[in-house]
Image (tube, rainbow, N blue to C red; front, side, top):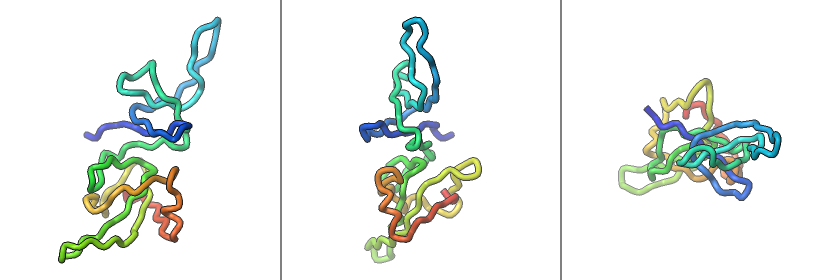
Length: 138
């Protein structure tokens, strides 16, 4: 069973990882409240959590790339072909990881040959070379 966790980006640009919470509490009679928003809780869980930019929320796929990096929704991955002579030739086949039709489908991709090279929030230019494969294959 894969670990269920999320990541999100703080306003400062830092990424945080953990459980996703979407809350809306109000202030009444001087009690401290949490602002309406999206939060990623730390390892100690609530009540401490980081407020994140909602558009950057991405779920962990349960997979790692060839370097051992966790792969999240919103990541951009690149395939590096390995020839029989042992030399590596990047072919610039890039894909962004998206949630489609109730899951991440890994049927066609051998994930051990892919590496995370960025994400769609910080590095959209990585997909601007005409290779904008939106995939429901991962």
